[in-house]
Each structure stands twice: as C-alpha cells, then as structure tokens.
Image 1 (cartoon, rainbow, N blue to C red):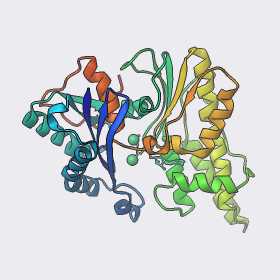
Image 2: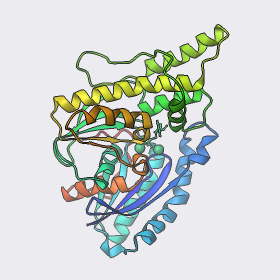
Image 3: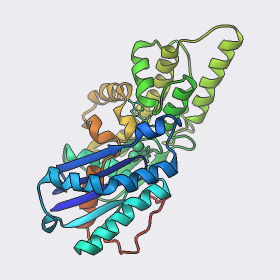
Image 4: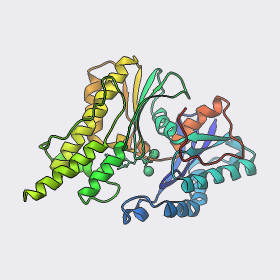
Length: 332
Ligand code: ATP
Ligand code: FE
Ligand code: MG
C-alpha cells in the first residue's frame, strides 16, 4: 500500500507518503518555528495562515520526492486531532478535497497515534507494547496489546513534559522552543539543586510537572533575594534530572508490571539526550527492548500520520467527507 499522510495540528505543515506502513517514500516538513519565535510560542492565527500558504507546496514536494503518481495512492490519512482547531482544519479540508477529487478513501488519525507509529518506520512492533509519549502537549503511558489499540495507563495531571521544558526555558530567557536549549545546558551544568520528584500515589502512573515548575521559580526567586544567582546550566541540569528520574522510573515499573515485549518513546521530548541516556541505561539492565526514534521522527511530521493511518486503513476504518477537526480528540 501507498498511504498519503497530512499533518497540520500545530506549527509544522507536513505531507508524506509511506509504503506498507513501514517505509518512508517521502517526508516533507515545513516548520514555522521562525515565525513564532519572537512571540515565545505558537500563535494560532499565524499557524493557520502559514498552513494555508504551505499546504499545496508541501503536497507537491512530497509527490516529487516520492516519484509516484496519484493512481498508486491507496488512501489519504490526516491528523483530525488533537491540536489547534484552525491549524487542524487546514489539513482536514485539504485531505477531504483530495479524497473527493481523486476518489480515494479518507482516514482521520489521532496525532499521538502518529507519534507512536513513528517508531514502526524504524522497527516492527512487538505486543504488548508500552509507549511513553512525551511532547509539547502530552505526557502519557499507553499500553498497546495489538495494532490500533490504545489503553491509557497514565497521563499528566497538569503540564506536559515539553510544556514544562518550554516554561523553565522562558524563565532562563532561552529562545522558543526551549527544550533543546535546556537539554544542551544540562550537559554542561551540575545537579546542584534538589528539585522535587512528583511520584504521586503509590502505584500511580500519572505525572505532574507544575510543582516542579513552581519550585524552579521559587529557587530562582529566593536566590535573587539573597543576592545570589544560580547558574542557568545548573538549574537546567537539576530540572532535567527531576523530569528524567520520574519519566524513566515510571516507564520501567509499567514495562515490568504489564510484561511488555517492547518499550517505545514518542514525541518531541524523546529527542532529549538526558532522557535517552537514562532510559537506555535502565532498560539495558532488563531484557525488554527499548526503541527511541531518530530525532527527525520525534517531532511533528506526516510520515508518522501515514504510518498510523496505514493500520487504521487496513483495519477498515474510514472517515466520511463530513470529517471535522477535533481539538480534544481522545486516543482510543
Ligand atoms: P503534541 O504532539 O502533544 O501535540 P507538539 O506537537 O507541540 O505537542 P512535539 O512537536 O512533539 O510537540 O514536541 C515539541 C516539544 O518537544 C517542545 O515542547 C520542545 O521544547 C520539546 N523538545 C524538543 N527537543 C527537546 C529536547 N532535546 N529536550 C527536551 N524537550 C525537547
Ligand atoms: Fe506532536
Ligand atoms: Mg510541534
């Protein structure tokens, strides 16, 4: 099968073609980061406008790169949610127009299913599988017993991990998105500050990062009042240590409890070096294989949507031409 994927949920306009759910034929991403940087975050109206301007260009590029024609495409898959509604609508409407014009099946895809399936472009899944999703909007542990089935076993009760990174980065006057900057600083800093770890109730797989964020604000503030300044790299290293400790410990515990055959990591924060290193260290002591996608597949792209969409298509799921963007779509 050749499946077309379209992704416009946030600030990248992306179109890709994937063969058999596992092989990238083309994968084009137009990022808008430069346009949002000076506002310190994604501005929804600007995002939508950029998507409108970029979508046909990116689509054409995806076909050129793939060197295949429309007849060979089996289905059109598109992120229907979650995300920014105005941004999602651009992709959804493009997908509907193409499905109608080219008479192809249409399949709506959950953005996080996409992040999970980015891993299948690297290696075949083994079930049961545990996915740690860490992105700008999500921090979740999802158990998959088979293709296309998602059981949420834990999630954040407040901020997402990526959101916490971006907020702490902002306090340190680092550019948006702040995650990669904190990550870089953390490698040169020392873990001199003792930040809290939010373990929550015994046995819980939920997460919480807002207390940590407040603790970072307080430490910076208190130091200032004493006339001291904390080194940004030490704050970064100490903050990252807390995030990584909780994420890796809970992931390992869940992997053992559910006896999984594979652990995969998904979402933009999967690019984090500290997280990758610690997960690799913890899982190397077990016989559970750990899969972390290459950086290019960690952040938003359409190959991941086509990969998740391939399974949905093979399982017979179809969307009608009344498909709508759903900013709070649940993963199920
Ligand atoms: P969602 O997928 O939940 O809708 P999103 O699409 O904004 O949210 P992604 O594009 O998957 O999220 O990831 C972006 C997030 O990843 C940002 O918060 C960014 O700071 C963070 N991030 C990227 N690289 C790193 C890194 N090396 N360390 C920590 N965080 C990182
Ligand atoms: Fe994403
Ligand atoms: Mg993004």
